[in-house]
Length: 181
View 1: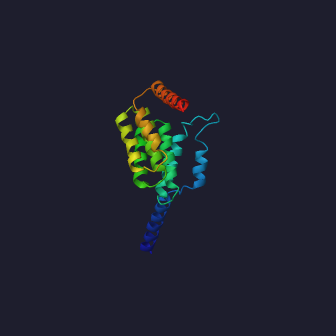
View 2: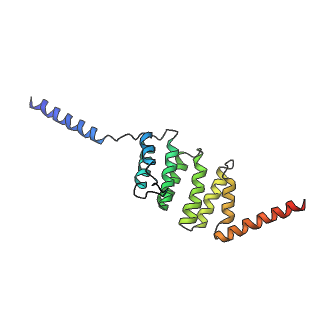
View 3: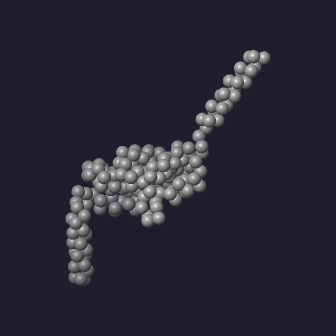
């Protein structure tokens, strides 16, 4: 009798631990609800809520790695970290996206975001930015973002004023050419 009671107690404890250890399965509805808290009524990032939202997105990705929507939520988690200026986490999530979902439509956008906002703007690392843009061009030559990557390489290291001058000069050359016709 005592042996049976011990077995039942151990079984109940094990069952209790197992039940407590179960992870809550994140739903798409929860993701959308979390997403609605990202920005305040003025359209500004809610910096208090944003890390939790990104964490929820990543939990969904971990729980649903084969879901076709997982890559979208991973990309959005990366975007949140870019907005929070967390360069290390942004880079980590971009690399995760490129490893897990290299063929997704989000992969070229992740590289462009990484090169532009993380390496160039946040870290001022033009060499890494150039490498990210070049990777986009080399690995995704059919992407609509190739032209943006090429222009980004052309403008690396320039101030906004220098970029505007180049754009204006380019427009003036086109207008002169058109007027000659």
